[in-house]
Image 1: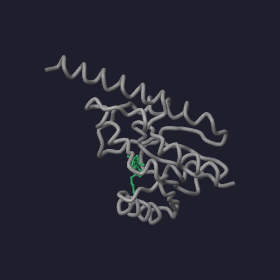
Image 2: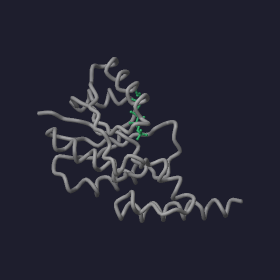
Image 3: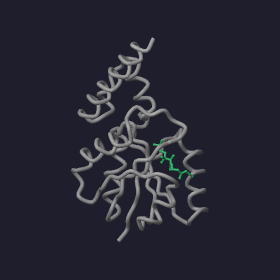
Length: 166
Ligand code: PNS
């Protein structure tokens, strides 16, 4: 039985992420979607909110489960019996993703499988979605409907509290 992890911040989960999760679920027996914290990014949603949203979106696949993770990804893989890290790859990600894949393999031997991002989502990233939403743009094309609604609401409530603080 082959078990893969799809790790990420998923802040919020996009159509591009879900495409990679679906394709991974077709080629391995079992998929763990692991919601981590990228220490170099400011988050919009809390980790628990991200898990909740992903759990709802991934309910359509019987071999996919969603969980939080902390610490090193390679330690999470070892503890959960995960054989492979599965990641979507956009052209802009190549050098950083390659470096992480090589570091992870050096640390414990766990390998990474890259799936080229579907062309229609190649320009979509959670960071850009957060930026567009924060500045009042329409993000409905890039996210599942419920996630888009939650993103718009979260940004509105954050902007309202920021206005009160001024
Ligand atoms: O969606 P992101 O922000 O690209 O996800 C990045 C994430 C959380 C998968 C990455 O930062 C990660 O693996 N963090 C865990 C800490 C770790 O293992 N760091 C060493 C990487 S070589």
